Image 1: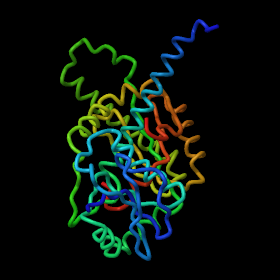
Image 2 (image 1 turned 90 degrees about the vertical axis):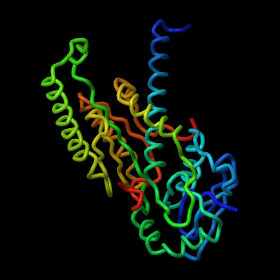
Image 3 (image 1 turned 90 degrees about the horizontal axis):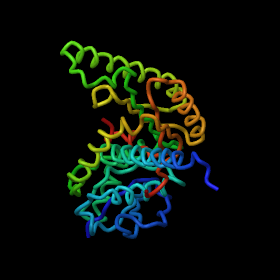
Image 4 (image 1 turned 180 degrees about the vertical axis):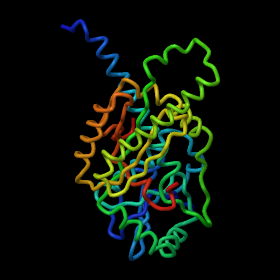
Amino acid sequence: MTPAGAPTAVAAQSRASLAAREVTLLDLLDRLLQGGIAIHGDITLAVADIDLVELSLSLVVGSTSLLGGTPTRGRIGAGRP
Amino acid sequence: MSVYLYAIAGAEAEVPAGGGLHGASVRAVRTPALSAVVSNAEGAESLTAESDLWDHELVVEQLMDDNDVLPVRFGTVLGDESEVERLLVDREDELKGALERVAGCVEVSVRAAILAPSNEHDTERPGSGTEYMQEALRRRLVAEHLSESIDRSLGPLARESRITPSADAGRTVTGAWLIDRGRLAEFRDRAAQLNADTEYAELVCTGPWPPYSFVGAGEG
């Protein structure tokens, strides 16, 4: 039997996991596109182009509201979402 | 054949078992001192999907399980394996120094969002220029206070830390910490405690990440 409060709890849970996923993706983007060892010289930079930049911007814009009220801690995004 | 570069590690590092970008098989290019984990770069001309990011990240994370690792910036392609070898030889001292710096460590992120004050839902009323300036100042002061509070609480657990002021008008504070692997649980606990103690902001901790923020040229 489903407790009366379950639907709300489930909705809250899925909001929290969405937020966790998006925060993890934002952290991933920050690191992969701005961090890491930069190799200069006779190399070609493959294109990490506009799609990812747009993704990054939309996540930054969304992150404040996503974070608010949905505390998530610990290891999230252990792998491919 | 051009090659895609994921990470650099010590000479003895074993090649991760899983596939790389678009399932490409991953191999190591080795010198006596170092190894670079690479795959053929076919299909790496256009890296625009979220799954591409995870393909790269998972190779580095697998390598990190058993090795100190220098993650390479996403999207780095070299002409062929001999160029990779030359990179490892030419920058050997620098790369070994970078590996020493992160030895035994992982990176952890804390992202904090400053919550709106309770009266801020009153947004339908157009604010004056003065109110706008006051609000901008308040946000900046809150962000500074939060940065100091985070640094005071988490800094002592880390070997190094970098706290970045927000790029979005004082709404967030982002930090990266380089911590010994053994202190991960302690760090998370303290971050959770800080989150509970900080009423005006919400903190989220992610990781362990490869040390992207602590590998020299990638910082900044």
